[in-house]
Image 1 (cartoon, rainbow, N blue to C red):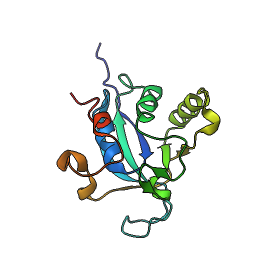
Image 2: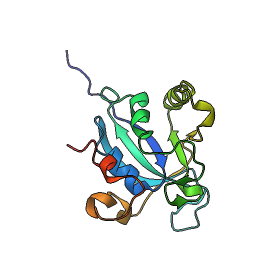
Image 3: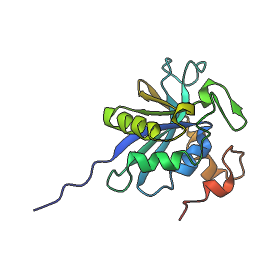
Length: 164
């Protein structure tokens, strides 16, 4: 009998400037691949105005190694879940926090996890279906890996926490 390989799953995490979010998430155990992008806007190109998009990281992961709940525990290490349209010095709608997915199961798990927290009534993280996604330009992909001295709202010690 052969065992079918696990199909990777994907979720989109918005936590302020995508450079730091991607650098942090890409090193988490169970993460297979990341891609910097924009979620849930209305334009067909990222070169138009920021029309509702949130900077996000498309995260491909192995569900046998990383659950949605564990991923959210990691994610909440790098965001201020109470802040609206701001993370660190980055201010504006595109810097809001959010969890987006095509999977209703992912969204329900995220909502349940947030509701289980004692501070759930204070949390301002969107949990919504992914309606639209645009990949960011190459200059934004793996930015802090390529340019480690660039500024980021996430402390370096946190960014390096899960690097092997």
